[in-house]
Length: 324
Image (cartoon, rainbow, N blue to C red; front, side, top):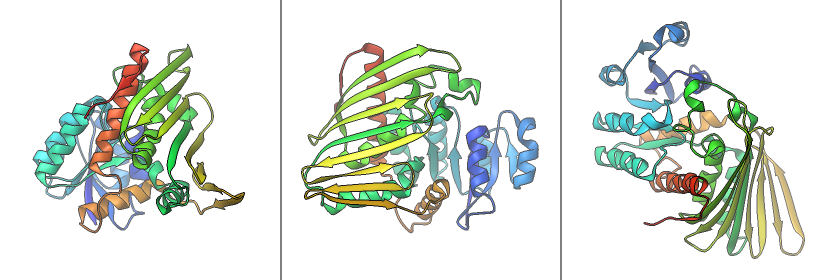
């Protein structure tokens, strides 16, 4: 059983704790950090963890074996480097960072400290995505040529906390809430991004936005791609990989469709799982040395490189090439 400190007890930090506490046989939260302790004191008592107001207090707690960051995006690098300096395993919510340089520095700090690092991309664990990745890895699609992804989720436009409405914390609009999950899938399936060309269209700003994002991709391996996201639209997930011998499409959490040459068609509807529990247990396995975390450090950094390029393309209205 891994004892974890949760830094950040807002909407999402509480969601994670509610998904885990008393339910996982691999992890439990023993410490929580909040700058507004009075607002979460009853929650901490109910869930049975110590409450403090600083990361330093959590790192000094002898019961804490690992740290989970669910804080505003711009704070991740500073806090992650403190965690690594204390030689504690790090789990950081998405987006891991807002800049490629920050993500690289965070991963490097964990590598030098010899501790595992995980990122909160729970869609990677959805049964439909696990099956899609299996089909692609099997080689039945032949040469992969193109990948498409769309993730709309009206929850991403809800006003959970004032900081989530700041452009400095949510560059690229829906990219931080939904698009980053598609980027993670793209990085895993197609590798590092070479170039992006993004379009952002907004018809209403503020706390209830109406906006869309469309992004064209070129990957270093020659694969092309397209990403779409609509913030106010009801939840919709699709990742579709096209090869010269077939395609495979993940729809939502549990549906996966494979189409192969010769009119071969297979539709699978898989049992639903608790994806938050799956990613948390995977992190515990990494901490215990049973298996590496499924999302590699290189994938974490490459995803943020693509994310930063997209936000730059939105700001400039021009294609952006990635280097390195």
